[in-house]
Amino acid sequence: MNPTFTYQQDQLYIENVALADIARQYGTPCYVYSQAALTQAYREYADALSTRDNLICFAVKSNPNLSILALFAKLGAGFDIVSGGELQRVLAAGGEAGKVVFSGVGKSVAEMRLALEAGIHCFNVESAAELHRLNEVAGSMGKVAPVSFRVNPNVDAKTHPYISTGLKKSKFGVAYDDALALYREASRLPHLKITGIDCHIGSQLTEISPFVAAAEKVIQLVDALAKDGIHLEHIDFGGGLGIRYNEETPPAIADYAAALLQVMDKRKEKLILEPGRVMVGNAGVLLTTVEYLKPGEEKHFAIVDAAMNDLMRPALYDAYHQILPLRRKNIPSMSYEVVGPVCESGDFLGHDREMAVEQGDVLAVMSAGAYGMSMSSNYNTRPRAAEVLVDGSSVKLIREREKVNDLLAAEKIFL
Ligand SMILES: *Cc1c(COP(=O)(O)O)cnc(C)c1O
Image (cartoon, rainbow, N blue to C red):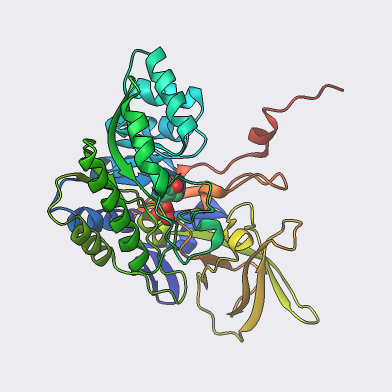
């Protein structure tokens, strides 16, 4: 477990604050993040890459709260975005457009215009059709779009199929074997400037070897391009470094970075990385209250007030999150299915969890800082959770709990 979270006199703390106090003040479900843990993850990246020209682009989709983005922006981060909406968030949080890379297979004309207007660092182009659209849009605005191709190195990330993105069958990136021809094509288009190359092979990788394999293939392309007279300013190896949810033993940030630096060796290009999960995942928890304990014939259920709409990862990927009581109690423990109130059998947060809990107790779903709040929905007309940021002893509400009236406001009755 992250040392940010510690038991003190049987109470679970985040930094210097008892999580029970946060649950009491802001209610549950509630996401709580540690500023120290967020800062530390960023610093580990920055320190590991400090020997060379680099840009660390936080992947906004992993946790897009404005305060989180503002924190990373202050620390010097750039951002990896996958929509125009995310660009607006970055700008609203004080991030620099010039440090933004724009990924994604389906960029719309409106999104391209927004990004060109703002002056982003680079478009990570994922198809020939997108390349031509970008050229036209830039031309119509009298601008030149900075371009990188996201190449698909056909490397198996050995992670869950839903978060594996670097195989030939993936919808992401351009085929490795097509890349040279596409760069030549791009070099002939008047409103584009080729600036880089990128890849992103998947998420929650727990080994270094696929990263290195992908990086080596990307470098081979860079060299082939140079022979063709196409010289790149940056090389972007994407994100994907995994975290410890349960028994995983992901590489340390420093070791991962050292392996990539070795592949880069004495090359001059700027190194860009796009970490998401590893920057925020273990910095956050989701607090949830036990509404009922429901004994069953085969299973006992702990029915909690957070559900798949709040934290989708267990339902979507069968993902594991450790679940801890905020107060350790001296009562008999039992094995529970930890489930939410949503009307789906897939609505669970954990299976077979041995816990000593009673109705009304609050639990912390650990490692919920990445792809938690950002994937939440209003399914079952459930307002989204509050978000809180802790810095030492200071506690700040960084997103108010949604109200049902917010959900109804955009709808109209025509009968
Ligand atoms: C999601 C994503 C990332 C971040 O991935 P993590 O596994 O959270 O580090 C980086 N780059 C691209 C293009 C992405 O889609």
